[in-house]
Amino acid sequence: MTLLSSRRSLRRVVSLAVSFDVVAGGPQKDNQFQFHLNDKVTCQLVQPGNDMGSNTPKFLCDVVRVESADGRVQTLTPQLDNDPVKVKLADNREVHAKIVATRLLAALGFYTDAWFPIRVECTNCPADPESGSGEQADRVFNRASIVREFDGHSMYEVGKDDQGWNWKEIEELNIRPTYEKDGLKLMAAFIRHSDNKLPQRLVCDDVHLDTTTHPSTTSCAWSRMLIQDVGATFGGGGLFTLNGKAKMNLHGWSNKSVWNEVGSASAGADNQNPPECQAELHKSLTAKDGLNDPTISEDDRRFAAGLLCPLSDQQVTDLFRVARVAEMPEYHNDDGTFKEGMTEASIVQQWVTVFKQKREAVARGRCRWKSQPSDLNVIDNPRGAFRSTQQLFGANLMSGLACGTGSPAFAEPSQFARAGGDEQAGSQRNHYWR
Image (cartoon, rainbow, N blue to C red; front, top):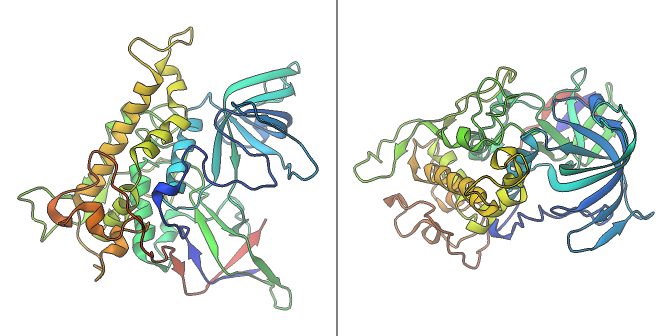
């Protein structure tokens, strides 16, 4: 089977970063159960986790009831699409990391799965839902999450159904503008996505099969590229990612720089001849053809800064609050109470502070241009959140004023340019659809 894909995109067409509701996690389908922060989800086990791969405790279940914190109740009706959902349990730090990473990427306009932080009541559930063994009873898991995968048919090569795309292949794609794909590399370094192995996902929601050709031809007018697994993020990264240091580890994340090599916007810096920048990201041992210390141009850096800077203080705070970082065991005594001097607000604020420091490192850096556009607003204001770069960075963009310590002042958005990267040249490879 031959696949013809005329366009590939990394990002949606979006306008305001401030319009993304981090707590809600974006829109949900009307014909599905609606999930919210800390909902109590009642479900019945369908498949134990051992049959599903990976190391995080999980299981597959059918949802029958959802009760929100405000008392609203949803029950199963014939109108609801009730496909089984994947439940992950927070015995592993990646449950928290996936919430932060996917909601950040979604807020910036990148395609991603949707993870929801909920509580689960599993009816007639075995003592060990991971293996499916043990006495059956109703069991409650207070730290859990549910995923709604991004719509579309997964695309991969024939005989390689565990593959989608990898970071080495992305270099060969004619995605325009190039700063979108390279800006994504900088974002991968920002969140410390070191376990960037296959599979990264390539999906299409409009597939056409032509059986009159030999072999048959599958065409996709517009495919979407997603980072598949962002569980080993917001930590120290490194060669090994099964340990706690690589996943949602504040000490590990704060001690890692965004950059290996970068210029400065400070007074006295040589802004006329900035260096070729390199982000710091050491891929894991399992990440063959993965992303490692990517080269970043000024185009890429300014694009990433233009995505990150419009995020408000409230949105950044909500990223870590909705991920329930304060529930991680290191912040609690054996009886479940907070350790001395710690509160939910203070713990969340620690994460927010490091996030903003890293965002400033992106915004204040200076790199060598790859292709400087005549209109800098295209790169500096990719979300269309400001009338001009002057509203975002001040009158002199090169003066060193970056995101600032507080929230940017938002204005009525002007008409914004389309911000999706497309592959105009047709791509022909053998693929299989599922």
